[in-house]
Length: 214
Image (tube, rainbow, N blue to C red; front, side):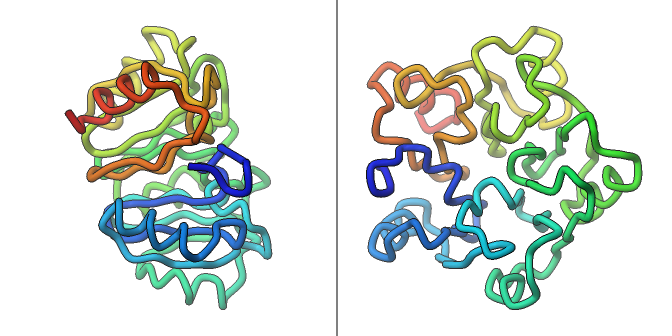
């Protein structure tokens, strides 16, 4: 699907196995359909007054890390018991953190204190890394407990780190007709994925296989 012609659904929404967080750019009817497909509850909110919530929140089944700009009423709407606002200058958590229930790979620019905050909030080990040399690992890859999809130019060493930290098989793909930053193109959990409307059948097949839906 797309939002008013924009196929980069991962920028405007994020999900784990319990909740779908959608920004105001996502029409309510569309958000409800997405939540039904992923079998989760829907939360409609901004973060820090912004609708690009997919870029600003990273979640697993334990907790969430959100932008330090997020406001108290927004956190209340999320209703996630274990949350951490990061005050680091790299506070677009969704872009800078790739996580599941086994681990987290984060932007290499995170300092030790922020690394510990991420690890505590998500209840998993956190390690710095890149994907295809891209430091915004959350935009360059997608992770669930069943699988990891990443930028097609990721190196063997980078893919090995993702597999080790995230405890899942790792495959490369594009989405939205050749877009390498697939974190911007997908919203996924262990039950399914919402994929940008420009994604080709071949890309869809790779996504289905890579995230363990087949």
